[in-house]
Amino acid sequence: MEQTIQKIVIAGGGSAGWMAAAALSKKLGGSVQIELVESDEIATVGVGEASIPPIRAFHKLLGIDEQAFIKATQASFKLGISFENWQVIGKHYFHSFGQTGQQTWIADFIHFWLRAKSLGFAKDFGEYCLEHELAKHNKFAISQKPNLNYAYHLDAGEYARFLRAFSEHLGVSRTQGKIVSVKQNIQTGDIESLILDSGKVIHGDLFIDCTGFRGLLIEQTLHTGYQDWSHWLPCDRAIAIQTEKVSDAKPYTRSIARDFGWQWQIPLQNRIGNGLVYCSKYLSDEAAQQQLISNLDSDPINTAKVIRYKTGRRLKHWHKNCIALGLASGFVEPLESTSLHLIMTGITRLIQLFSFNQINPSVVDEYNRQSRDEIEKIRDFIILHYHQTDRTDTAFWRYCKSMDIPHSLAHRIDIFRDNALAFQHNNELFRIDSWTQVMLGQGIMPAQFHQAVNQMPTQELKQLLDSMSQHIEQVVQRMPTHQSFLNQHFS
Image (tube, rainbow, N blue to C red; front, side, top):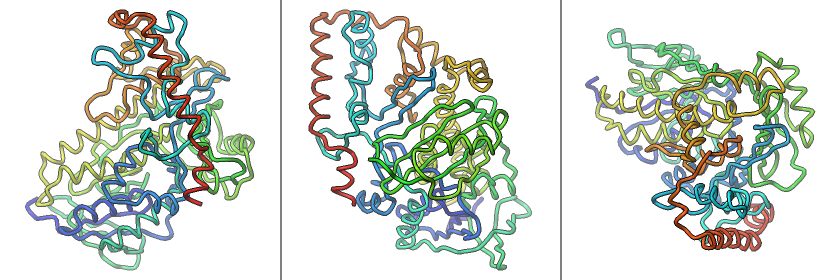
């Protein structure tokens, strides 16, 4: 393409569409025209209510006021995820967002902890992480010291409305209407315009597909192709429902493994988000709904809805003059709350790579390479939770335990089990701390630790660990409860 990019058309609203509109209008609004098309008749999935810490960097990039965002979306704070019944029934562990212990250039903290464990004086691994201990005691506060690594639980529908107001203030135009057809250039196959049910034609130079699982542009029009991951991530259904808030909001998400999947519980300021992710091969929609309803802690305030999906990714996230974001680009299920994050990185990647003069094949290839690399590493992290289990009580868990896994994940598991080595590739989302916590939580205990830690005298090691845990205990004691902090600052 030789033409310059003068107009960007976003197909679809929801979180993906309005996040794209907000970021593009904030950073590129002076150089391009931005129009978002959405239909009031088409409901969004709208259950992406849990986030991870990089959302704060995204908001900082946009200049979003945290207090205004929290009030608008009824958000609460999130320090991590509690995993219950994943390795075996009755065992719980916590994946926190914080750093555990202190790192050295020669060996990660786990090597010092393993040595202390062999000597008999190590506490549980999580007790050396502040965010872990705050979550355990339902404590939270925003302060410079200590500077916590946190995210949010939020109302996805209100988040989209909040970003819509933000975007429209920056000049984004919104057109209401249902897309009934897509016109392509006869010679190049590029998308030229969207035709709405009203007969209106929306022309554009670059199109962003935020139409959800349908992939109206990227798949139904451009036939980009899809790589199916359901042999590794067999859950293909989710039922979501909201319930009354009857207790103090916890500063973490609960993920409770069930017979044929898992249940989420996400506390907002005004209600609880609940859902059951399951595999339809083993559980019918009716039985899944009964199981979810029977495990709720409070009364429902809306009707449960079933969401059908297939885990995997588009073969190309950017194809011709169309970029897929959110569910239109792929899905790895919500276990580690990565859906909103993948939207953010897709948008920021576009801004960083694209000159907006013309679409260069080299830029498209690099965008697709980075997108593929990112989502595949997230995929491996999610598979880890399912595969590395000792549960054999149902056919679902027996399949997960025995299934073949990607070589990239098998290598990570082997090197951690053999040598206590976890690692983070360049630009990889999940850090060493995350891989370490989940591997330990799922029952992988390393066979040995780095012998360099033996250079530290035993008493010095004990004093170091005692000092860490005592400092954390002191901080936890002086912190307010999460609910009291919300009441004081955001009610």
